[in-house]
Every structure is written in structure tokens, then in C-alpha cells.
Length: 176
Image (cartoon, rainbow, N blue to C red; front, top):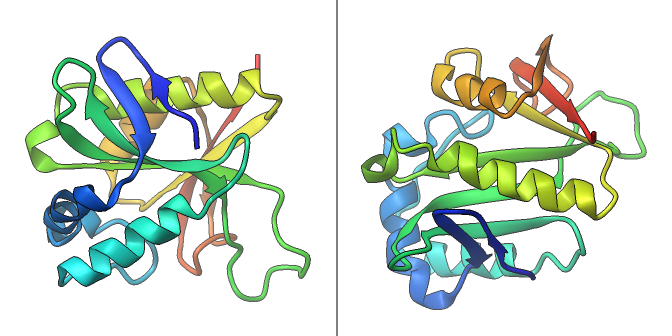
């Protein structure tokens, strides 16, 4: 998987040596509370290593799940994903052509604009590689991620239950 750079950040593939950070990140309810229909915290280093293996298994010229680090010192600050989004049960068979962007950052990194900067860099990269549309879904109560979507120039489409078997606010962005 490729590395993507922005002014202050470097988005790179996850590595096994990132397991302690990932465990710290995803063992925090404040971080995972809006992830999926049934959020759960990560409980041990083995789960972190297994999650890193899954993240690294994505072999695609556009999609990926990146570790977000500061460019200046390589400090890990979070996670950014761009991947096909799973449909809710009961949606038409055949899968979804939709690609979602999502992020979660360590609380120590909140409020610095990192989510917006990382997502913008991945969107620029994906659109330059031919992707024409990206969506984001947020929990209706996740005002912070909705604000990131708006800063990215994403359009709020409304509420949907099409993904993750739960109501979400749907945002989309088209390639320029």
C-alpha cells in the first residue's frame, strides 16, 4: 500500500510495531463510540495485531487503511480508511459500489485539524486515481465528524439506514 503525504501528516501502512498505539487508540470508548452499529473497545495486543493484519491485507490501487502520523516526527495520531462500505442486511444483493472515507484519531490529536487534512489528502489521491465519488456515514450524534465532512466540501445527503444496519447521516463528495 502506498504512502500519502500532506503538509503536516504522513499516511502510511500500519505495522506490527504500531500495535501498542492501536490498542491504546481503540481501547478508548471516546474514540470508538461512533464506530459501527455495535461499537466495541479493543481489549488486548493480540486483537491489535490481528486488526493490523486485516488492515494490511487490503491490496488495491485506491483503497486502504492508513496509520496517520505527523510528518515532523512520525508520531502516530490515528487511523484513516477508504474502502468499499458494507450494506445493511436487507439491502439488495450484489454489494455496494459505494466507497466510504472514515477516520478516528487519538484524543491527544483532537482539535488540530488532522482528520480534515488526512482525509483531504486521501480524497485528492483517490480522485487522481479515477475514483469519482466518495461517501462518509456518521452517527447522528457525531457532530465532530460531520464538521470534518463539511470542511472537506462533502454534501449532506440526509439520514440513511443503507449501511452498517444503523441510522447514519450520509455525506458525499464527487470528483472535480
